[in-house]
Amino acid sequence: MYKASHIFQADPEWSITVHVEDFSTEKEANAKTNVMGVKLMYVNRELFYLIDHEVFKKMEDQDVIIEKLKPESMSKGFVDQEDYEKQDISIFEMWEHKGLMSGFESLAYNIEKCN
Image (cartoon, rainbow, N blue to C red; front, side):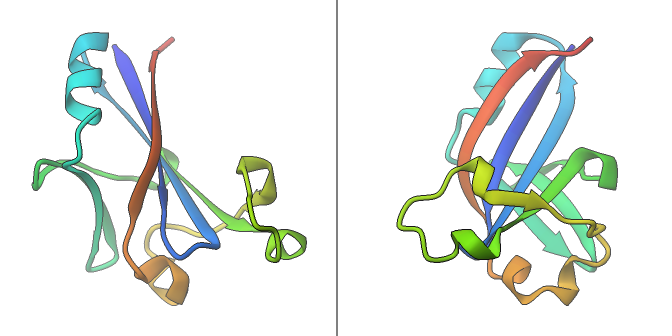
């Protein structure tokens, strides 16, 4: 089995990493996640991972890492992952944070073999 880790950006200060472990081969994982059609969709307090406009997986809290830009990094012109800190926010609670409701843009992805 292979896992895809995909980083999405919501509002510029929010980063969401999702892990999808439903791929039988590395080739399948690359083919499905290395496309422009990969999206996150938040509906009725549930988060869905879509590939080509079809739901591939309903995300669970253990599949998702939500991070927010550290206050001291807000004025930086260029930030990286070290400028974000993990937030204790469940998928159900995402709607309470305006910045997480502004849409999600794909930033990067990685494929790795599951243990």
